[in-house]
Image (cartoon, rainbow, N blue to C red; front, side, top):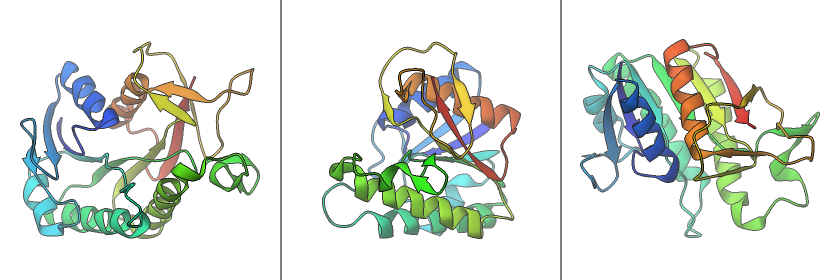
Length: 207
């Protein structure tokens, strides 16, 4: 499979690239600066996305909104809209999005980001990811999309290959913890690219 990975050098994106390549897939990495052997791409440029996406089987969007206080929602939505438009221009249907955990439900109708305990530092990013999910659900019906939310906590760790998959609800263990390593998140994402079991919906992955 030929995969265009937008955001290929981030904490999660770099692990997706490594996992996909280890399975024999061809990965074209793209970043804003074109660093570390990646293609230079502004994800909000639909024509640029189309030019890079042509000839690929799938696009993975693994970018995070800015944390510099300039506002998170608009840049991420602009990138999401441009990626959808660029994919259509390039004739690529398969999209997998690295999403956020904040929009997962902790109770019916209650999202994680709306709880009093949710850290203020991460609220703008989580609300932006939530807005992107709504945008994709509303606008990407003509594409084969999947949005994958991590557990509440994700970071560098071990690749175990053992985890649980869920839907719109936050997954927790017996102690109430919700976590996943970036390595195992990458395993779940590449599994979905290969198997396509969650087309047209959001899933989540956690231990």
